Length: 271
Ligand SMILES: NC(=O)c1ccc[n+]([C@@H]2O[C@H](COP(=O)([O-])OP(=O)(O)OC[C@H]3O[C@@H](n4cnc5c(N)ncnc54)[C@H](OP(=O)(O)O)[C@@H]3O)[C@@H](O)[C@H]2O)c1
Image (cartoon, rainbow, N blue to C red; front, side, top):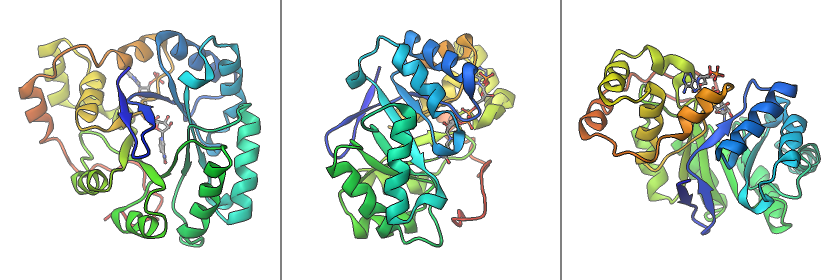
């Protein structure tokens, strides 16, 4: 599995399993299958309500804890200092883990200063409860605010990113500040399968639109966390590393951007 190095020297698998929408027995089964196939990163969040189901899969798996990379996220109502610390302990308990590999602020809040949440997260890191700290859905102005408060703390920004939402300015800013982007909804929640350019490139190179989209992102040093629930999809999404990315596919995919944002709750201002 290809890995990206974070600014603190720690490594993060370039591909992980997204688990939004997976719950209960189905979630446990999918995570188990993913681990058997070779996935090592699992992305979850308090909001997904599946920590216990994931814990069951992790506990039943033979994969050593140090080889896993588990990401979870603090939801908006828990961003105040004390609440955040309490929430982190609860999430660890639900996941049956001693530490997160990556703990993220799920969404920025207009009410709680980011400095306050980051202070709590820094202390969680110092206490060994999170190996790496990051944010999600942060725009450039919000990243600047976070970097001004804690210049070395933030290693990752998890954002919506796919060929029809090519956030080049954000990617450049992240690169300059040694922050890795993780693409959520990397398959545009299934829309890549309807894209005529991706379909014809897929036919030409015998790859699925999912594989082309994921590889396009990884080529840009963006980590990907596609959600899949069937073994065939899990396997398909994993097989993106062992072939050359055709130059004409890369070139054509640069032109697919339509500012096609699928997730926008109104804050932050993405325009
Ligand atoms: N930080 C945030 O605010 C945030 C927001 C949204 C999502 N996320 C994270 O990002 C993850 C991924 O995003 P997402 O779930 O919204 O969308 P996505 O990964 O772009 O798309 C998932 C959809 O694609 C299908 N699919 C996956 N692989 C396929 C393949 N090889 N062939 C055909 N269909 C395939 C899945 O179907 P099946 O299920 O049938 O396989 C599912 O319907 C989430 O699960 C979550 O972990 C984070």
